[in-house]
Length: 257
Length: 318
Image (cartoon, rainbow over all chains, first blue to last red; front, side, top):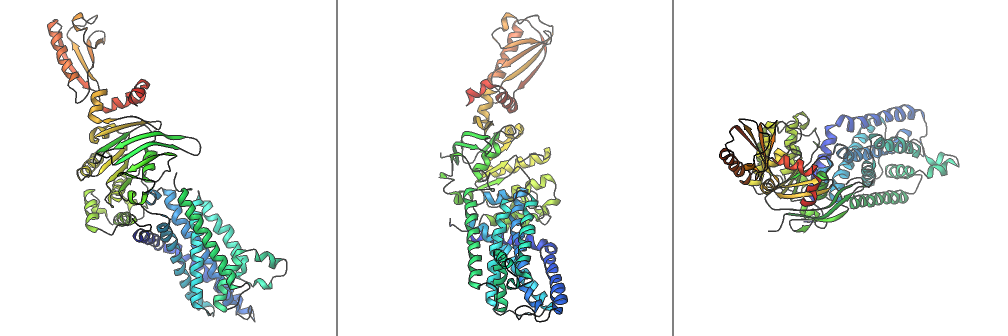
């Protein structure tokens, strides 16, 4: 038997996507509506009052990559964490653990589905945003690749969170109390370059700054940090997550008794 | 014949220090129904979990189909099925999709004909589009059995398969399990219900405190450890057991009105009942009249209770 069974991976992937569509109101409509409200309030209403924009980019358009990232980070993390936490919580995880399924199939299934859902959300949000603000994408291919990279990385992170959590509170605490504040402070609504010292240096310690600016570069060709650094850090995060999950499967930490 | 499952020195000690399995040795033969009996907390579910990959053993080896489960888990798990004790599955899924999912998880291509056959055999076909949460407890348990059968396992673990189901459904499930055996599936089931083991099992293992106390053929166990009890109601009370009956394991009860015989083997053995027949002849020869005879042979339950309650049995059995 081979080391990777595509059919097993596809089965998990399909199941997870179906679960997302089964709860479409909560998992698709709610984040789209929330992000759209941001575009309306900050982009169309407040942005129209700000002449000159930020770094030569209209304010409404400037916040599009950051808000997009805010949704992607939150949804990727939540989807993947719930995906693995729920079977752990209900006991249905027995089926996965007793099947001839390894870390490869599990990651492709759970993380792949969570990342796919984030990509779908991103597409819907971008289309919706076009009705509220006037934006453009300078490097559409790079933008797609970067969104994919971030979605996959944070889906992996969410998967780890779902394995670590032993309560619903712990499951929501990281997205609510860590990711969202860091994203808000990570240059979603402003350019880090506009901050005075020492706040600019403090802000540079926020890893989300590199993600927001990486995506902003693919939209407008400019960012507060080098794009290479953004991509390298995101890749490093992805590799660390994959390594940790491999260790989890090898040792059975929080999965097997 | 090589056993389909061979467990040697299996130990499981949890993080808190509790040892759930203490050097378990167990061999399961191909094609048999093996019942693992034991009280709550005996280690039944931990033992199953260790074989199926849910529990990481502390030490010991598990060989299935002649190969090491630890080394060849992918290949071997594909041939093993598990029906858990808890009704644990995505309750919002429709029955058919859930069973198809189980087959896909094991890396097998869809087989609608087989899935239909399984669902029909378990009387679930009519409910194939119903969400699992809408089914009764017994039906839900059948869904778990269907899910476990979807990848056509050669070795099937049933952890308390009839827990919480009514008598009619339980008997129905026994029929299903018997059918599985006819198809060549080896079945290992844990149960609290002695009746279940008595009805279905070829061999029985008794586990307590993480140790296997005894493993034997059901019939042999009943013959070896079973007893015949005969209550002979006398026409006139006796004050003491007559000399003519001193060779028999009898005693007087109920103020001498009933002669109680306890001896011989249990079910499948003729020694107890034959001795009772001899006893009745001896009574006649001694001129002692009787009005009724009530013969009772000990069940597997009696044996089980004796095994668990009688510490002297444990040493002999192990």
